[in-house]
Length: 185
Image 1 (cartoon, rainbow, N blue to C red):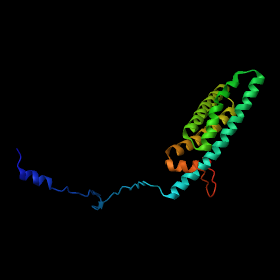
Image 2: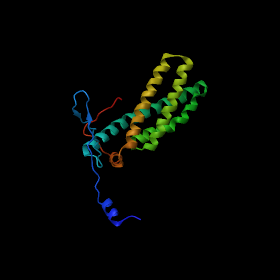
Image 3: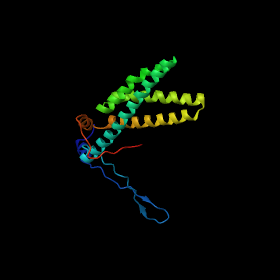
Image 4: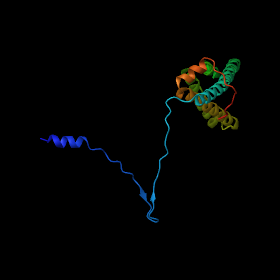
């Protein structure tokens, strides 16, 4: 059994903090390494929120137009494939995913935008296969263009997914930036 005096003294002992120093062997001088401090902000400042809103707003505007262009090309593809009596009309089943991309960018809905990112991923793989099958330079250009659109849209999706709900709600309520900035990457 332990003594009550031993128990009391062990409870009152304070831990000691020892500063660790590294000594340089050549100059016999102590070297102190400091680690960079990381600031954690619980409530972002309005400037950070406005910058994030402006980035999401600008990217959503571009993605909205890209989805409209995709829907237009899918419709043209449907008409030409029906006139030529080939099976390329089957790509028209992706039309709702393009519409989800338009609607997701317009209303700032990440779940709908995810469908458009999936469509872009499928089409990128399709163009990659065509590039290797035909060995044509134009398919290579289309593949890289589709990769760029996929990257751009994925960046918007990740920004919307990781941003605070207050930022998305503000954008959905009709927030307009004081100046419009277009991001190309």
